Image 1 (cartoon, rainbow, N blue to C red):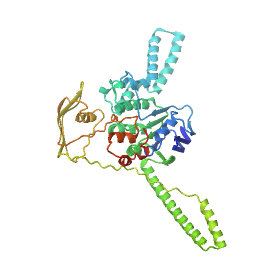
Image 2: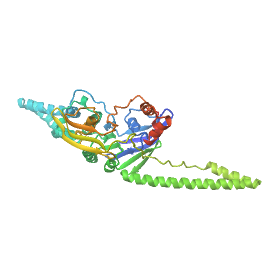
Image 3: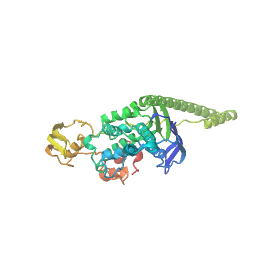
Image 4: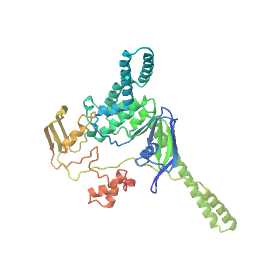
Length: 440
């Protein structure tokens, strides 16, 4: 066992988030933490890593293990390039290689006992160097970077100039290359394309340590994990198997709980009817029997009504104004950054009512196309033409349109002042955000 969480509880103010959460992670086990937004998944990770203090409970690690943690948001900075930043995780191997080369040079000029001493050190260093995959560490770094969607042209980009998603991928690369015995990953697939997700699935499946991952990608979890810890209504339940097995067992449990609850409610109603009938006789013996049944009813361990989790968003996107049939026309679009050409002679059309997806590997220009259409950056050539009565709504990766100091409710109300409180709440409810509307 590499990690045990025992009776972890945490509240924020009067709101309980986690209540007596317990589970353990075995060596080389791959575990998922699942639950709706706000269930406490990231809070649990922060408690495990000591970034938050629990109200009660214990986090126990196997003695001497190294733990790696990838948070959702990274704040990497500095003048290093992507390659230099990731390579820095191999500093101990690099120093070892330098010492080996120094010994090789010095051994040419010594004899006798001094040579024997150096040979002993050289043998020890080369053995340790080999155990740490020293002869292939550069290839290992390049392989991880390419697996996470970086091209060799990206390697020389400064980390400080990267987007939040790119910084997260750099941090993930460093973490994977550090090879800890336990890895905690909070939403690692958020900034990966399909090829990179597939690469990460294979990497984690073959990883020689334990992995605990928070993710909403059920296909990713199906491939990677063999145990699921569900956080629901502050409690934790452990399920063996992948996500599909968890979903099936969860549904069975829910049906069983509902059946037990309904049967108990039926029994309670029956007892209440019997008690009422006995009291209606207005006889001492009947009243005593009624009181006896009431005591039994009071002692009954009543089941809570099983909650039905509404995990589906209900969104109706209806434009205020009906546009013409031709919504967007793009002709001959070109864009390069320095010597890197993203696309040439790009042509496409979008008609009213169509739903269009732009897909491709990271770095191929998908976001750049959207920014050109929204006049955020200029194209090098070509034409973008909007149809009659077309207005654009744009959701970007970095959430630049949000004020991080506002509550969710205030952010919506300030942007759309003509909406009354009820309509704002209805919008938040449709996005499953009603319970979080006071949080900033």
